[in-house]
Length: 583
Image 1 (cartoon, one colour):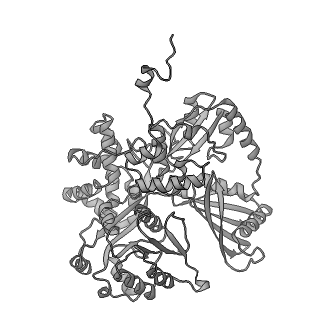
Image 2: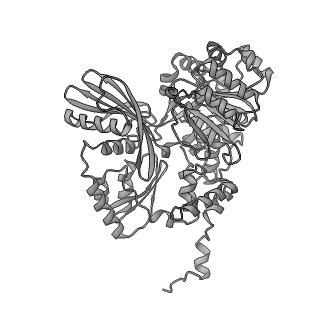
Image 3: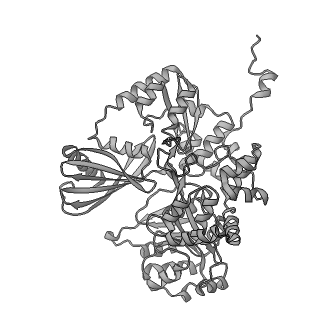
C-alpha cells in the first residue's frame, strides 16, 4: 500500500485546512476584532499562555465555544498537551480504565485512555453527566506519569482543608456547611438548590478544619463567641476560585458556611440563562440612559443575570462601573468597587464618585434604601444607564417596593426602561424526566436526582415610554407572567409539572387545571411565548440540519418544538455541535 504524503492531493481532499484560532472565532461571530486585538496584546506580555485561554479568562468567549472551534478547525495541539491534575472523576476509576483527563469544562471533557474507549466512555459518563466526552490520543508515558502523580496526591487526609475544598468544587456544589454535632462533624453541600451530606469525621478533625478555614479567611481563630466573615482564593485546575466564608457561634461549636464562586460555572452568554423574552431585556439594557432592574427573592439568580448582562455589553467600547457588596466575580475590563460600610464607603458614595468618572453604565448591586434610590435616579437623569437589583417578587411589585423605601413613581416615571423578574427551577433529566428510576434502577444520567441543572423562569417588561409606565401603574399586565413562563418550559420538555407546582403552588395548579379542562387559547398563548426562546429555535434548526424529523423534535423539545417547526421559527445556530438534540 502506498503511503499518502502530507502534501499529496489525496491528503488535501480530506484534511480540512485550519484557520487561525482568532480568525475562526471572528468568522463564527463569537468575538469581535478589537477583542482579539486586546487578547493578542496580552499574549505578548505572557507568551507562554495560549490565546484561547486568554479569550476565556477575559470572558470574550466561553469554554464550550472555544473547544467547539478547536475541534472544528483541527487545533488538537491545544488539547493534547494539557493534563487535569484535579479531575472530578475518582482516581481509582481512572486507574481501572488506564485513563487520564486532559481538560474539564462544564459542557465538554477531553480524555485519553490506553484501554477500551467504549468501556472508558461508559464509566466516565457516570461522573460527567452533563458534559460531552471527547477522546484525544496521547502518549502512554504521559498517561502513566499522570496516574502516578494522581495516586500520590490521593494520600491527602480528610483533615486537610484542601481535600474538602476540592471535593466540594468537583461535586459542583454552590456552598457547603461545616458543623459539629456531639463528637462528629458533618459537611452538607448544596447542589442545584438541594442540601445533602458529603462528608463526616471526628471532632478532632473538625477543629483542624475549622481553625484552618478561619485562618485562610482572615477570621480570628480564637474568637468562638461572635460571628465572623471573610474569604480567600483557592486555585483548582488552573482556575482561581473565590470562597466566601461566614461563621456563626452555635451550641457545641462554630458552624461555617462556605460559598464557592467558581468562574468556570458562570453562564457567560445571556441566551444560556433561559430568559424567554430575551429580546425585550436586550432592548432595555441597550438604551443609552435610564433605570433597569432585576428583581426576585434571595437565591433566584439575580446577581448571575446582572453579571451576564454586563458581560454581554461591549466592555471595551463602554465604561462600566459597578458598586458591589461583595464583589462575587471579577469581570475583565469592568471597574468594580467593593462596598465597605465599616470604612464608610457605601453605595451612595460609590455612585457619587462614578458620576464624576464619565461612565456609560453604572451598576448598583442592590437598591435597598431611599438614599441609594435617590442617587440612582440622579444618575439615570444624567444620561447614564443604571442597572440594579431589588428584593421583590414580580414586575408589578417594583413600584410598591420603591414606594416602600421612599421613592415615588413621579421621580422615575420617565426613567424606567425595563424590569426582569426571575426565579430558578429544576431542569429535568433527559433520560428519566424527573422519575429518578429507569428500568427499576437508579437513573445513571442524573444519579437518581431526577434533575440535572436549574434554569431561569422569568417575566420581562420593556418600558418604552411614559405611556408604558402608566400602564404599569394602572396594574396592566402585557407580558407573560413568570408562572406562565415556567409552564411553557413544561411544554418544551425542560422541566416537569411537579417542579413547576413545587415552585408556584396554587397559581400553577390553577393555570394547569384550565389547560387540562380544554382552555386551548391559554395553552397556545403559553406555547407561543415559550417558542421565543433562542436556544429552542437554534436546537430545532440544528436537528433539521441533521435530518431529524418531527418525532425527534417533539421528543427533544415537546409541543413547543413542533410549534417552532410548523411556524418556521427555527434558526441555524452559528456554532452548535454541543447544543444539537437537547439541552
